[in-house]
Image 1 (cartoon, rainbow, N blue to C red):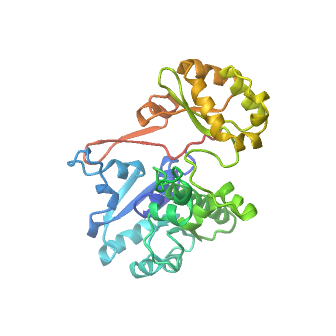
Image 2: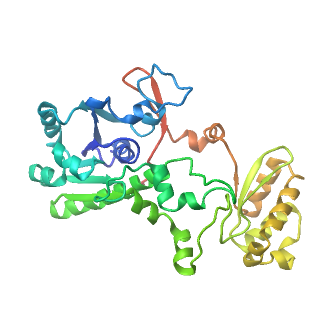
Image 3: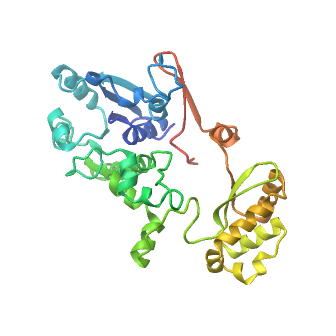
Length: 355
């Protein structure tokens, strides 16, 4: 039995963050009813197609990415008849996911104050962009800029670069589902519902981690460094083998650096300028150049085998095709037939097992 098989979730959200929360519950057995705005043609991401996507398909790949396992209702909540349908659906629901602005939710009759009067045990999971008092439209690109990610991503001296996944939305979905799970625990103890709120901005700031602490404790403003790490070297340096296979390194200790030197057949770890992490940071450009030059003497499979043998943290730089040729990524694909007959594929949002 899946953990949420007796739970009903109403999803009043669109785009990515809210639907990702709904899909999490759907994957784990909940009945998820996705309510889309009939007056605007539904979730806007239905039409967010790549140029090469089939224009005849009713559902874009983007839409399919976070809308697995849901029952869709097309409703206009300004219509009394459609609003009544929604209220009927909510009678046996435990969770409602919403990304309406507070004033809009009040007008449509789906604010927490209204819903808790009708359904005292309801858990309303609400997403905002910058908080309830800020009316700015919130899209991931803007949040990456506002929360400092854009300012430290990219190469030195070049234009800022965003992360290629809407990661602030994904992280906000995690924050919201964690809040919902705590609210469910509270309800089990007290029988009371809850309002759970998460903002994209606070999520983004909470995700700055060590980069935030580098500023708060040392007044160091992170600078664009490409893939390099401000505190560790060689970490983020890339190399290419003789046969054109690319790798990146994530060496976090002197022992691991010794292993890297063993792989490459050098004694750099015994040289003063590379003997400690602090020294390697000081002399990073020269070290990176040496690593690149030395790596071209080896075949890719040879390097990979040696990295594994010596315990050197590394990553093989893969494109999306290569990622989904791996057995573990294949096991994470969810596939189903959409109402228009098309086959949709996406990856699981649930990446854990419970035994």
